[in-house]
Image (tube, rainbow, N blue to C red; front, side, top):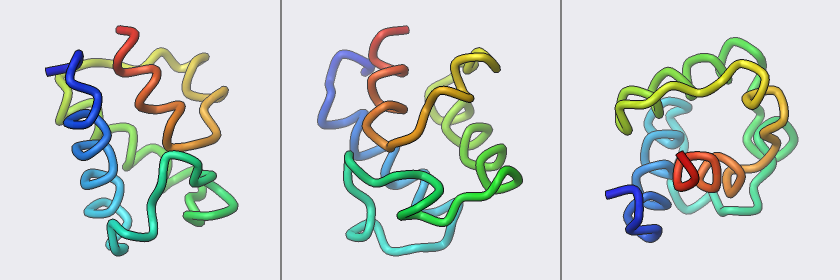
Length: 80
């Protein structure tokens, strides 16, 4: 599953959209989490927990702080 990048992209975007209750079409790989999607620290935790649940994985706390765009979440998942 993780090697199928289009599926990973789709799942990440769907998870973010569902968690934030926004339209999937507003989310791109280049979307900035805070500036474009309005994710604050509380919402960031909700999004990460949701993604961890979907992909059955855990993000490293240090790595989470470095993630700024949706595409970086996908990169992180596919490299794990």
